[in-house]
Length: 341
Image 1: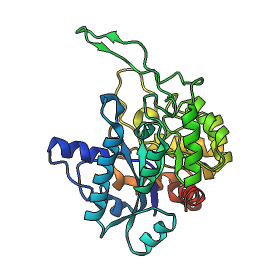
Image 2: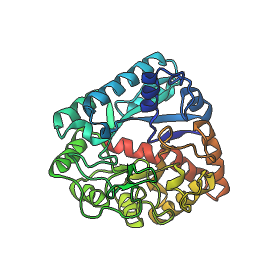
Image 3: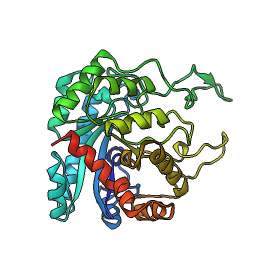
């Protein structure tokens, strides 16, 4: 069984632990959700590796994304017997023929470009083929869906904020620079990723672009009312454009739980989102976007080695083998073929 996963935060996790100096491991084998040994065991074809940059620390985001890209390059070189990078679509088939996994480089947080098209081109030259326009902060390109209310004080008198995960941002979308960016991304062959982007921004991408785009790690809002998920209208419009959304394994994006109650996550919850998205948008609009190494462990799918179990669960839920193939890898590959050569 082949698997293509549109989103993980493994490189950021590796760098974080490397800088701490702890014994977390390397890309070949580590204590997180994804490493090469488990990808091989599960039968992966391709893994997207996101360079995630947290901009809330006030540090230079472009400098940080370069350090992450350096680590990615180092790990790919150190493991070239197992995995090879993807810069054009034909690389995927060539890597497969050589018996190697494929690694597609992405960036999560458009702020790394500082609103400069030149930096977008530099990222493309480094091999980046997908960009998540926003994370949880407004940036030069647009606005996220998450809303941070005014700070309150906890029992100890310390200020804190509880994000609003129920109220979507339907008014603030792409900026003028953001519109320029998505149009330039289409021109050069870099996939637009709308996960984390505001509802208004999603519709702006629809308005100002023509090619398929993705929501690399977003589920269905009708199944779990969280603003990180897509509405049914978004799913339909994404499908009409030929795009794909990726099933996110984060338990809180799969199932709503009473406040304070632990949400361990289940494979059945993932299947519920898969069924809904396919019913709304058709079998062509869904793929995988695990968010591994960027989320708490989902007990139903603890790490990448459990992906064959997800395919088996899809079969038990009534999906045919040809449908499972589409969901697990073919739909995403089609978008890649349509968007970069």
